[in-house]
Image (tube, rainbow, N blue to C red; front, top):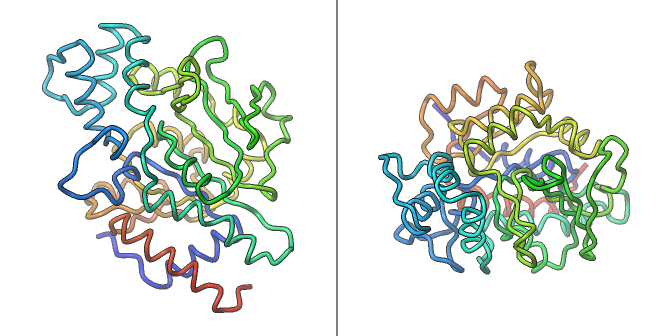
Length: 321
């Protein structure tokens, strides 16, 4: 049975985060963090869950989804794509995510990390966080901007002439297609944080640049033909392989995550212990995470974010090594 994180866990995670040794990995559940239990998705206020997004696509974009698994986002989006085409699907997704959603407590926690990293470093060299997300919205970026923090943005391109590559967007808005990731030195984790959106993202300024890995076919192509380890800039990939992972808002029922982890870690798994936070997980979840060398811990994300933030703040009342 998964245990609740204790004070020793938060002490360890805080120390490792502050030296850049933990990579937060955000799933769709992060977007529900802090949302009232009685509330549902509301454009511009509350981000949708995967099931809510599937229900919207199944009923509000011009098709009537005929099957019972109406909350299955992969199946529903695939049906819309086949019935109407990729264009209408992307237009519907743009309508959902091209809105000003407030950052969640997890987003705010992560946006507060850079200032704590600088404070701990006290003028010495430091390593800012690398954050990986499979979410399409820009709430995390908004949290960083609200905190006055610059960041590099790495976004997967799902379609068009450059499908299968990543784009680097700098803090000043300039962007560059990454053609040679093995010789791309622009990501410097000792200068500022990096946000990696490995399933694409909404393009708020120009909808023509939207990128969504969402349908069954998208995932099959992404996972069977895309060796993500060969597309990510080498210094980012090295950082990923030499860090702990902290999975927030994710379930290993998501088969695409299992394949991604296999691509990143290989059959032997990771060489660094990692953790996943879920509320009241099923026993099968614990077994699935354990097979990947990940310890599953039982806690709601709201509580976890609050306790970790408190631990990070109190770290400066002690002498950190």
